[in-house]
Image (cartoon, rainbow, N blue to C red; front, side):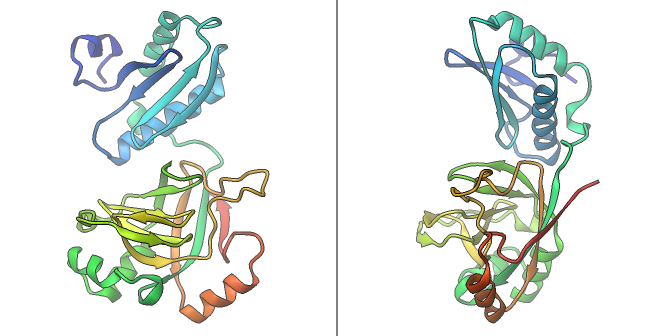
Length: 255
């Protein structure tokens, strides 16, 4: 593993430590999304949260980076960078164990039809029939790689390589809350009505953002999701009866 000291001389090397503003530091493991870089970001953040060094006030992750907010009065920047550098060299974070108490969510979803109007188009780009596309989308367990763009909104990946399909050249004016959209080997499970350049292939009754709850973000980075195909009648029944936001889903802790 390349040391952070070397990173100062070779800006293209990883892992990389960069100052952000007056009270932030970004630890990046890659500029390209890979499973190992996402694993490193999640595991490194979990270790920081566990160690809880005085002066670090907040941490979060993106797809391939860990962001650290610190109090420069309590923790000088040079001391923080030295601490992070030492921690980075302690192990290979790209093969590190993922955070504890991750959950596996099994989420019912309708694919195709009015709930997934672009399934056929997306399947064609992936070299599949719509039926085979549904099989792949429901048989692949995807990780919550990060939360972003909208409150509680997960980016899920990675799908098989044939799902490395581009975004649309234009925007869909609006997809609904619970929509499942696909692009670049990832799925987004939308938590609000919004325009998007990703293709909508399905929909769930799952609410990822629950502002009325003590834990408004239902999913956490590192969780895994597996979709289960249901018909529109079952989906309508779940929506009519569900009061929790789980949308008929079930979860369990991963080993």
